[in-house]
Length: 186
Ligand SMILES: [Zn+2]
Ligand SMILES: [Zn+2]
Image (cartoon, rainbow, N blue to C red; front, side, top):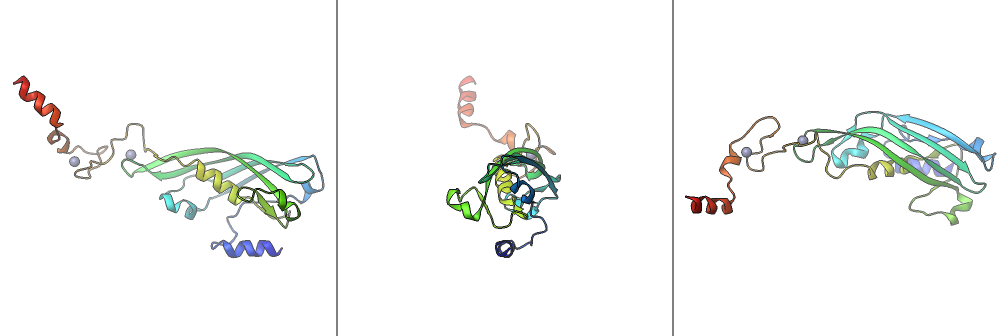
């Protein structure tokens, strides 16, 4: 129990939105598996860094195998994110359907753990899989999200959103190589 309280101290928002599964039943049945389905609104503060927010609930479907020593979890994370378009800063709606994989180990087996990826537990009734879910989500955020295919972006000169209005900047902008060619043709 001590560790869970410790975890809570680390999490400034409290534990309300943490995604937890209860492995007490599966722990009693080695070589078996159990399916879990979780849904939350998603923590928008997690997406603040990229200027985004959740546009749909965060859904996690997980199949956990009890190997007898450790728990092996495999599943999918589904949601929809709203991110700023990388060209015009408008709303880019990005569906996410990402693979989820992590090992869950009791503290006594922590010597087998990959500390970067695995989840060490002290209470099998309260297994917080949020770090694993957030990792999978983070990996699926596109580098250059777009509001639509062929978004025209903002004019680099006057800042007008070229999806909404035209500006005069482009006509003034002539490639100097074409300028020369025009003079030759004359
Ligand atoms: Zn755009
Ligand atoms: Zn312009």
